[in-house]
Length: 384
Ligand SMILES: NC(=O)c1ccc[n+]([C@@H]2O[C@H](COP(=O)([O-])OP(=O)(O)OC[C@H]3O[C@@H](n4cnc5c(N)ncnc54)[C@H](O)[C@@H]3O)[C@@H](O)[C@H]2O)c1
Ligand SMILES: O=P(O)(O)OC[C@@H](O)[C@@H](O)[C@H](O)[C@H](O)CO
Image (tube, rainbow, N blue to C red):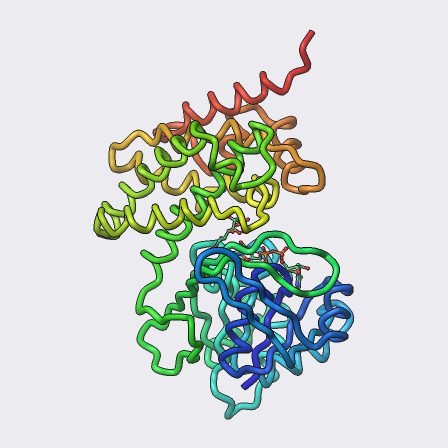
């Protein structure tokens, strides 16, 4: 069994590659990072160190990597005979890997079983987004791609901080959850540690609007307070209280729309908050806050639940109160910090709100968001 995994980064090595290797797949990573590709090929494996309660050690062996820029032909040939293709490259990168996936699927033998393609990104419908990009690449052969592949949406949950750039070993939390939307298919890959569900919607939203909304809240408030680590940030009583308020709002939405039980969701929240407080995990407010433009997007962890709560007549005060801290997030080296700054410099606060969040004039959240953007602009002005 062959698995091609795009993105030999934190979650790629620390979770997806690990579970695929433990399931018996020959794992080949594809990445643009030539140093990481060389390191994996030189070492042929790496260690996964879990930290925190229930921690175990894992050794991943027999893996290799291809450079997706310079070894395009080999990559296509690998996809043509893969059983599973997974990704963990970031949602905005998916269109860039679509050409290789389209070419690989179209190069499969006519009698090959469909390849399962799973985008393991923090986004609702990431595999469906990838399927669309692959269909565009396939052009008038899109139907053929659809017959030869299954794009299954997934939710992946394991906190994997930034790693030591030397070597390929990874430190991760012990907690992990991988949920795969199987729908009515009977040929879903069997991956111990991953669990299939008929419909992913409730699971990905519970994850994104609890783990990721909460995580981002801790990151932006922590960064604004000058705190470096996530564990230190959540130890600040005011930050802990604001995260709880934010998660109370998103839980209200999850209960209203997906019917989760209040008690079960309360337990889920408590586990999530404990995971953030894990001092053995060297995670930072800069990593968790990365890509603030994406995180303020319409389908994302703040605006999507806030907008839908407003539709239910609930004012998402706690969620909206985090927006100024997102706009104030300014670490060096994050392209999206720069893009967001440019948008705010070029557009009025009104136009910037709609461009960044998708919320238009006349919608319930519009006035509050414009106010937050305007106040952030004023805070950015140099003092006289
Ligand atoms: N780290 C976590 O805790 C975690 C947990 C769950 C989900 N995720 C999701 O997984 C994805 C990756 O996150 P990460 O933390 O592993 O990031 P990362 O930056 O550590 O890894 C991304 C990898 O993708 C590679 N890459 C970039 N462009 C590429 C391309 N065109 N082709 C092939 N490889 C390419 C990068 O070189 C890098 O190795 C994101 O969508 C993230 O939201 C992360
Ligand atoms: O990966 P992002 O940028 O969407 O979000 C940052 C973190 O919240 C995220 O990576 C979590 O660690 C992860 O989603 C936990 O499962």
